[in-house]
Length: 289
Image 1: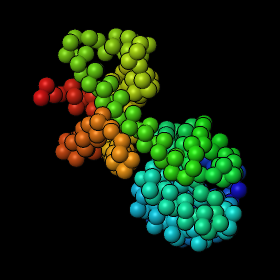
Image 2: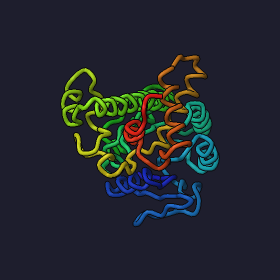
Image 3: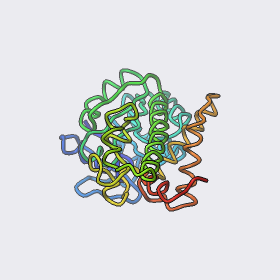
Image 4: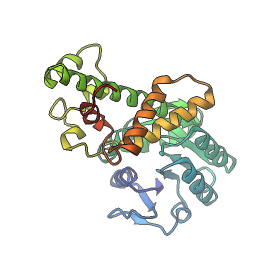
């Protein structure tokens, strides 16, 4: 396919490289990033000229709306606008409506798997939009990721992502709290992992992304909490979850508590630029309030 890829940062750059390595004709645009070996256009609209699919990976809903306003008129009717950003549900649905009014297919397809998943082509895509557009984009999902789940109409991909990451934020905090408590009770961290990872307290945060260095599979904790998934991004996703919860009149007290803790960690403490699992040293260094 002829593909335009808009947004070539830590996630978009490797995703575009994997598509190019698979033989697709990829043209990119980014205001700052210039990945090696990728043909670049002078504007987002220019990158979309003649494209079968335009993929966007952008920081927030405001920027997505701005870019969509530029690229939708540049795409030919029948093309697919595939947004892989994590944004608010309202922005995803508004962009999809504009794309569909212009005769385009529209998909919101946020990802899970982080930078490692983008590089390795092992991302999971949560996809909202019509079934025909999903079928057309499926070969691209298969290159960039290990799984793509069609979650229903436009906006449902974002809904799945923010619900998933609300769970992740809550379980990571609980995991870090439990390790800090185990330390103070004199329980060895390896013993703690061996018990919990095979018991009822197990979770992805414990088993696959353990926040304790030297325990379990290699994780950012083993690299001084250099981000695989930054605490700043977790805060962004948790805020999106609470924005959505407010709009839907949903009671999410643990989601709100996790949002408040990550806000304090990122904005008032030393969490900015660290992995979201760096909550463990935060709790380890604190007493009971």
